[in-house]
Length: 392
Figure 1: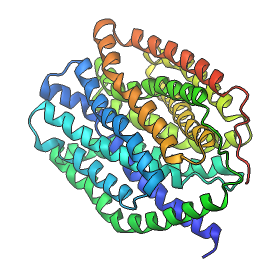
Figure 2: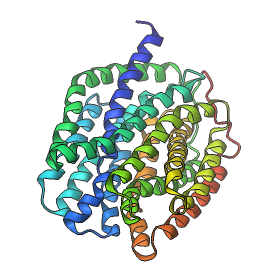
Figure 3: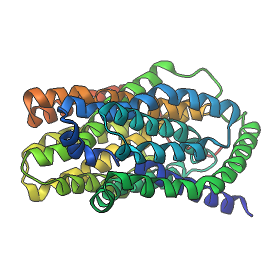
Figure 4: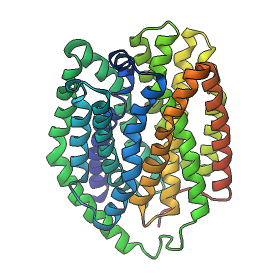
């Protein structure tokens, strides 16, 4: 098998696995209104479910990123999918809110294990089309995230919460063996590449200040994104729309990511990545306040564009940190997926509390201000970096 064919086969398997993994990331939010009714939750308590998912991922993902860089365990991705499916699949079999939080955290653990190896293996240094190829992997994940709300609502409608274990665990079981085999080959290929490319990779000290700025901008980015994912359905219900329309808004947001990522991230191959990402973040901030004031017919359009911008910035931040830390891509990935994404999730109860006190409109304005601040920090952290892939 040629090197190109092997790369495409590997990228295909990674993309399928990413699709399944990211289904788990959006299964719970469209169910929040139902869980609010079952357990009598406030919006602040509702935000704790998002925080539980991200807390586990945030605290543990750097550990798994470090272990990947050092050992590259082939079992990581298969184990991750099993944990994701089991955690969310068992929500319908518990009868107290604490157990719901624990199960959601277990699924977050799966995400923490999955992303460092999968993202590292799908980021190819030896090509000028690095952003384009990486966008395929990221788009598959966004397609999975777009499928999550529909899978959740359809499953619960026809089978109840107990039916989630069937729809969520079967894909993970199917992928265990082929994903393990691919992981073994991918680990060997990455080791060979690194051994043969040390002279061309940047081996100097990590630009700590720049990396820290990117991470902090990522926290603010994901505070906006996860805040919208957590509260779009409750917003729809609270403003007179129904639960199904709330799930539809989530799906539209994810479809914006599916369509936007391959287009917008590919452009980062010809533009300075960091500055380009900052512009997208500024644009997102300007759109968010319109959610609570725009007519219902145009709301899906705004949500679609916001989804495209948010997901594209997330993908570009990963590429930026890979370029800053080329020998430690597992750790670099965990900084964005773990600390930035997890940190944003940990702030979800804060957003819920603001909604409890001041309503949705004020909360969306607050998210806009946070987006402007994050864009400014990202601009400063990446200013002067060329930010494009070069063939070693």
